[in-house]
Length: 225
Image 1 (cartoon, helix red, strand yellow):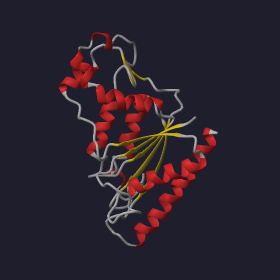
Image 2 (cartoon, helix red, strand yellow):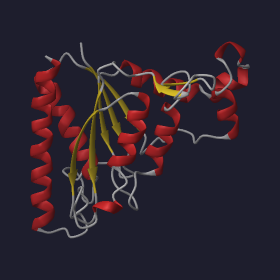
Image 3 (cartoon, one colour):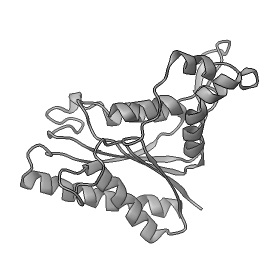
């Protein structure tokens, strides 16, 4: 049975297809999951809304706890890592990760960055050994078969690689980098642009992105099966 981890990071609470000024990324991620479940109803879905319920930020105490060997952790350290452990456990169970990540000021929302900081965990999703020759860091999820779908949106247009302002887009690249670091390298993307223009160009972009989502469902489903 496939396990799908559905993550939403938008600060907006509803999709743009259901409420005025709603979230385009929630619209796309919900469409993906809805289409997927219509084809593969036996899939187990884990939902995590970091936009509305962001995980706690990394602190000095968190770092101290994370880099203390598990057998040596005190009770306060276990408590400090409690949310992180839940998020990592969800990620480890997932075969497919579908993340709605809008662009806020050229990068992902702070809420999603806090999610990344909580799942990039020494000893759980990446290894570290300062005495190891060559590269002291290595991904622990390599070979797990996990796939990541990044569904984004932006107010302007031309953020695709080679586009008019593609060099200002630090959403997909930063998410790809973080997940690659822990061993998730099978990544797919779709995005809506022109949100601030609110005209036919936005409508066209939405149609293209929704078609891309449908294609991804078909393609990834055939691989899963």
